[in-house]
Length: 231
Image 1 (cartoon, rainbow, N blue to C red):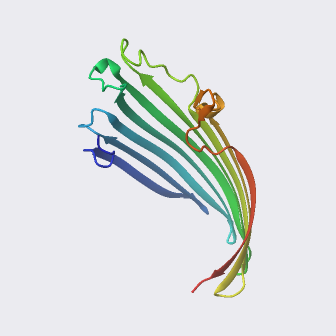
Image 2: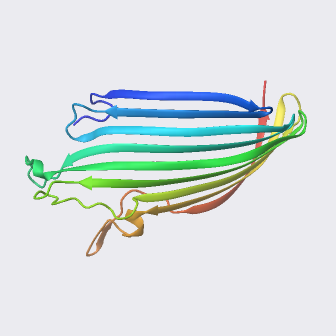
Image 3: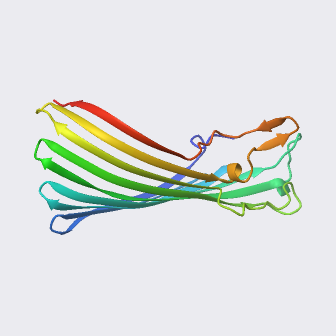
């Protein structure tokens, strides 16, 4: 087997971007990206993968020194894989083949406010971002082989959410020097079928195996000071 980037691949894609100013002080940008990879000479492994991404960005100038902005995006990633189940002896029976179709969907939105409190002196930027992602799968295998009829997960493979609130105050000391003070709050939540339904991936007498270091949910607060020199 070859790695994905080494196998023969047919790639196609589309990338569209449109920028508009439908109203005074109001700007709108929309984009769409679509892509697909096919591996015509790969009988097993990754057979096909694709993505589609929509995004929308907008901004509105409240005054020469203040602006509101917002954004939204939707991403979808798909992959089709094929493999064969074998034991100690390599199987030559197609009855032992199985396939998996995987899909990840991500939605992100947010917005903020940027204000020059004093022109060329003080600036403040406030923003909020929310993102959610979920993964699903569809498994299939012919009856009579190993495995004998693959069974799908009844739940989503994983679900994550991420929220972030950021605030930054910029003080321009001179034409070359500035200092920034900021605060950042982030909250992350994860539900994973391998961790939520089964606390360990394999358990026998006196032994346990845990797969992949999945980070648990967390909350944290960050404060920072940044010194900036521009020339």
